[in-house]
Image (tube, rainbow, N blue to C red; front, side):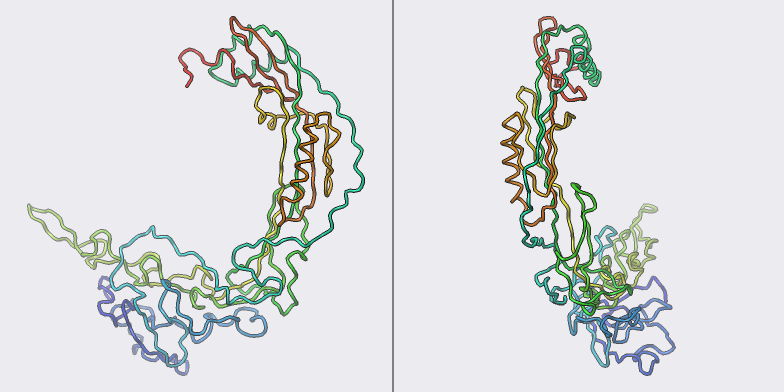
Length: 482
């Protein structure tokens, strides 16, 4: 056949492109398909060397394409939950293009466009779709499970016994910084800014250093949350742990330990005894769906000649029609996505025809951190979070006691408030552990004078970080402050 010959010139010729009604009777006695062409001669409008698509795929005879999955089906039979008489999903192939059993009529009612579509190589691919929820098995303890994660409240458990309040030691004092340390810290701060001048840092006279301490209280609540949902994957013959192996355990009956305490982690696992094999709903267990690029026609309109088969050229002072070299005058070209077949591998089952469906349990370990900062100078409080200090207090327990012995009463009040809030803040999680700390961060406010400029800067943290918003030489020659 001349490959340049247009396909589907009439609805009943070659690859189905319009409304077609055909009757097929299967393969009698394992021989040639009834109604095929003698001598395996392909009809006009088909591709040489291939069997014509006659409402079903070659070798597909009333069952699952490729035969019974390796290892057999669970329960000793074929997959449960088949879809007898279900229409083919809209936009994904031929209506009722399913299994040919005996004398049936296969129809295409407007599924394939009557005209060639414009070629768009950037058309988004189809995405896998979830099976119908009503086809999923009923599993005790998971009756309301869908395909989206549903948070599960933990079972009621006794409040963790705190026992007696632990004995807490007194808070030690912090070292102070000298004038030399303050000047060296300021010079380092100036060196980190390209437009800062170091003359002021070298020449300024330090009048006074006022030492103080900032307190940073943190409370960590480490909790575990569980959510369940239906999940699916292509069935490739992998083992199936179904209800025949016993009842499914409850979502909170499955023992799992956190990989690391006070660290955010997530794990997924298959709930035992909930798996089953279902025929793919997207392709009706055929393994193929309609091509999303050519909409099943196998050909697309040539985008160089816009489907005309020729291009206008200006030659010898006249406009002439020149045969398009891209489509060879046909006005159409083979779809590069499906190679002209009009069908592609099913994206849901990846061509395996069946799906393994099971209940997926998502376990999420989350570390919830809240804090409170006490800092009584004009320096912004948030700067205290990013520097180190002295760890004055740390406790870890299933449930912690609020801090009540700290010299600063604001820390004691903040601890009482945050501990009470965190105890009821996460009803869908099981609290595994709590930990709270108090850090003491040294802060020094340095008062200085440079020429006629009187101001101050701050040195804080064990790293001797500097906060100097009023530094007098913040721009050098040629720079301007925006």
